[in-house]
Image 1 (tube, rainbow, N blue to C red):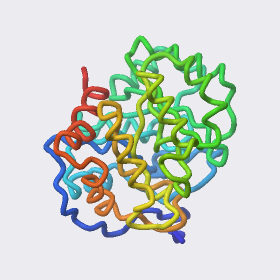
Image 2 (image 1 turned 120 degrees about the horizontal axis):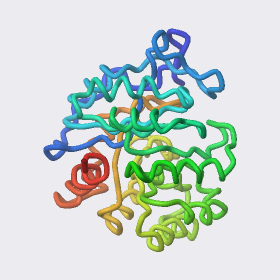
Image 3 (image 1 turned 90 degrees about the vertical axis):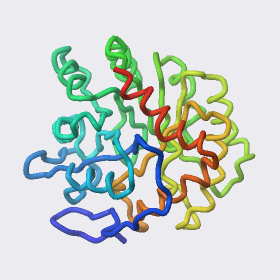
Image 4 (image 1 turned 90 degrees about the horizontal axis):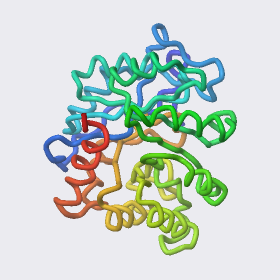
Length: 294
């Protein structure tokens, strides 16, 4: 179990190994977070978990340790819709980070432009009930419409059991939609199982739908080195090579089973993207096209 420290949970590995795998030049860790520091950027009162501080400097040091060039920082639910910690990290990144924000329905156009200028290129809709309170679909649809003129995309996070009832809603959203963590498949069932194939079918039906082949540490039943999750990741990379992203998920929010080694996660990349071309698409071409197009 992750231990308590500084009134919050430490969920990240204290000494990740240096990966043997060397990512291609310009590689992007396309899903990570920052927490606080809470003394400057307090956590949201409505949060479902309280982490220890995981600063931008720690994130950038990990980026360099793993051999990556850039980050996409996703607003953590512990900060709610207060994006100040995210914006602070983006502004300190020397344009080597982009962001995905969580916005309030009444956000002003001026505030949206400020987020864009800082490096935000998307917003996230979270449907995981253990992490956030429910939000009416109409609110999400209105928010999606408001950011289209900025060229932003929509990130959605949900449990596999909710895919069928969310599918009609997903099809109403404009622009590019990115599903976090492969829609959290049940890896106790094979890749060929109808449950996972329903997600594959949706990817096939919606050319604007992307996914992150991330978080084997959250999906695994077997534990490290996550061999029960690799077939799902590899399947999506093979069949949708131009619509997949990869990320560490550092600092692994609210992880309780173990502290994932980000060096190990990096070393697994050749098993899910076995050729240089697939690796370049996953780690460079796709995230650069999505986040650094301007």
